[in-house]
Length: 281
Image (cartoon, rainbow, N blue to C red; front, side):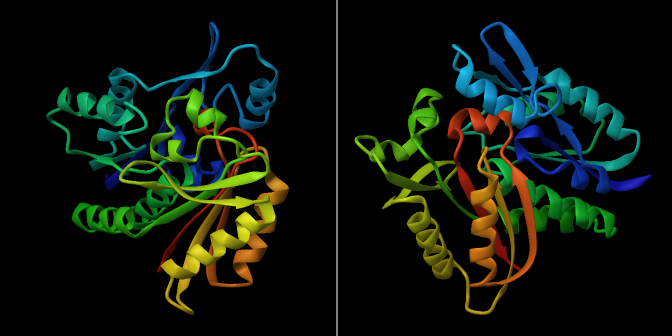
C-alpha cells in the first residue's frame, strides 16, 4: 500500500503525461453550452472548446463536481493508500473545494486532507505535480503537506488577457474590475491574490506586456536563482512559446512545462490569454 495518494480537479490543467506518470487522480468539472453538458478535458478538449466559444450562441457556464464524484474517487484511492491529499481550485473561484470537504465528511474512516490552493489552472497544477513527485519519492504526509503549504505561499503567476469580457461575463473578474473601460489595444496584466483575480498593470500591445511580465518576475526572483516555470495559454500557443524563450533568456530556468488552459478556466479568461507561473527552487 502506498503512503499517500494525490487528488486534484480538472482545472489544474496538467498535461496528460504528468497525470499518468505520477498517478494523479483528477475529478472533472463540467462546462455547459445551453443544454449541452461536457466534462472538462474528457469529452470536450480545449481545441474544440475554443472553436465553440467563438461560434456558439450560448455563453458557457461551469459547474463544480458533486460530493459523490469525490466520494467515488476517495473510496477507490482509500483502498490503495494510507492517506489522501486532495488539492483544489481556489474556493473564491469555485465550489469545488466545498464539494471535496462534504465528501470527506462522509468518509470519516479515511485519512483525507482537503486543501484550498487559492489558485487556478497550472498554478494549481505545479503544486499538485510537486506533491505527486514527493509521493513517488516516499515522503510521508506531513512532509508533503508542508511542501504544499510552502508552494501555495511561494508560487507566483502573471497572465495577460485579450479582453476582460470573459472574466466579467463569468463573474470572476474580482478586483480586476478596476481595469474595465475602453482598453482598445491595451492588454491587462493580471495575477491571483488571496484566491481571486487582481489587476497588476495595463500595457499597450502583447509584446510589451510580455516584457513587463518579465520585469515583474525579476522583482520576485533573486538574481541567478533556479526557477521552475509553466507557461499556459488559451488558443495562443505561438505566443506562449515566444514567452518561454524570452523567460529562458533572462532566468536560470531548470524546468519548463508547457500547458493549455482547459475548458473551465478558458470560460473565464477567454481565447488569447497567455500565463506564466513560477517559483524559486
